[in-house]
Structure formats: structure tokens, C-alpha cells
Length: 309
Image (cartoon, rainbow, N blue to C red):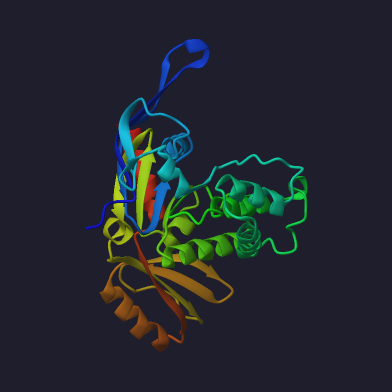
């Protein structure tokens, strides 16, 4: 097995409280291994410790206890930093710079030659959907546009590992889809993407593995198919017509409106009977949708269990 891209062992972080009164335990012993390729989602409610963990991984904060190694080296090592790209949750950029100037500035910090940097900047701005906006000052960018240019600067050094703190925050549905596609494209190129998010639907769509952190402790982690399972929990069947659902076993009417009805069935036997019986009653079946356990359900149950500890 290849070494993990990021290895986190016994990570703890304690902050001194306001006016030096008391202590805040932001991290309480985090253990994680992020594989060398793929997309790893780091999920949790606000204040759970996601951003603190990412800042320690990038070397922006020092842990109170524990160790972080990236590609086998300590976090903060210069060689590691050359192969890292980082997008903070709420990046602050000099708003008098244009998008092109911003990406060029960050590229110059890595010593990328002028012609190569110019070509790479143009390519990255196109990639994140800012074509035609590269000469616009950042003060005129929307929050979503700032998120896009932040992603471009995170990729300017062509890093092996991308660490993204809420990369889809502030984006509209089209923008979120474009960023999802971009992240999936980076995975296909063999990159490692480690990102935090509170948008569970996006995480479920693109992640290979996830970890859920609550109150500074990881409460769930692993591959999505292992955490969620493959078994269908129930089926939603929609039909149109004068028929009703009476007499069908294990059924629950979800909605009925203007001749359309949706019922929930909790067994394969109930599905078979409904599919056979409803047309005989004059109904036309519109759809049959199986439902497995969702990441949202796992997320909420993990929070509830931790809250009750």
C-alpha cells in the first residue's frame, strides 16, 4: 500500500479563552489518513474543528499535541509547501488587484518563469470560469467569483495535494457543479484533494472517503460505500390515476395532488405487489426510486450521538 498523502496522529489544539480565562479544546485527539490519490471530505458542524485541523495541516497553526506528516515529511516543511495548494474558507485578497494579477502574484512566489506563469494564469482562470473577468478588479468580484479566483491561486504551483476549506461556499448551483467537475478532473490527474464542507450533497457526489468531526473528535471515517452500505432502505413509487394505495402492504402515502400520488414502500415484496396491482386499478406508474442510507442521515446521527455523550 502506498504511503498516505496526509497522516494525522493524536492531534490536539487548545486555545486560551477570552481575557486569558479558561481554555478552549478545539481538537481532542484527531487521527486521520488521507490516501495519496482521491477526494477526501472532512465534514462537521460549525465549530467542530475543521478549519483548525486544515490550518495545522498547512502549517499555519501549531498543534498543542500530536503530529501531522505530509508525503512522509513534517507539516510546514519547505518541500511540502511547494507541493501544497490551499484555499481558505474566507480568503482575503488585495481588492485593487485584478484576478490575473492575483494569480500571477502567487505564482511568482513559487518562482515560476514569466512566460510559463502567464500561460498558466490564463489557463487556470479559464478553468475556474473567469474568462473575460481576468482584468476586473477583485473589489468588483462577487463572493462566488472570489471563491473561483481563490481556487485558481491554490492550483498555480500545480500542487500534488490540494487543501480546500469550504470550496463551494457562496457558489450558485451552476458554480457548484463546475467546481465539482473541476475537483473530479483533478482527481483523474492523480491529485489528492482534502476538503471541508457543510454541503453534504456535494460531498456525497464526489468523495471517495469522508471523516465526520464533532466537538474536536472524529466520530466516523471511512469509504462512503462502507459507511452508508449498499442495501436499499425503502422505495418511493409515484403513479397517476384514479387508483389509491389502500390494501397495499407496508405502504405510506407521502403526497397526493391533482391525480398524482407518491407512496413509500419498505420491502421488495411490497414493491412487486404495488407494481402488479396498481395498473389493474387503472393507475399509470410514473417512477420507482430506491433509497439507500444518505450521508446527511449519517451526519445527523453522528452529531446526535456525540451531543448525547
